[in-house]
Image (cartoon, rainbow, N blue to C red; front, top):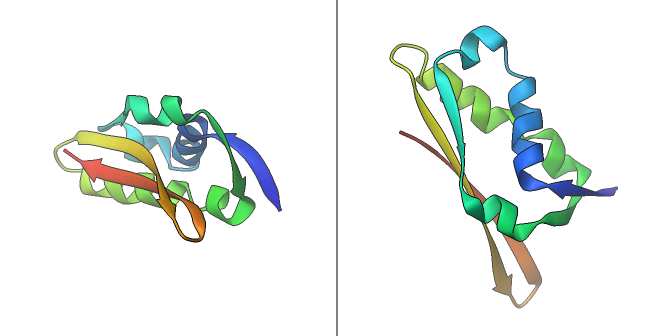
Length: 90
């Protein structure tokens, strides 16, 4: 099943699945690239895994805090387009 999704909303929805206590020390930083790509048709399986990178970053930031920077890029290939989401902690 495919659904149309805004990437920033997808990551924010993933963050909602993380315990609030874990998110207290983590700041989400959305790169403008997420908004520039607009709404994309994505398989539902991609949408359900959006919490894992946020959870991992929140766990890493637990001791001293930090920022999770999220960016996106569409890559062209012989098979069509591929979406690359990057999650980097700072």
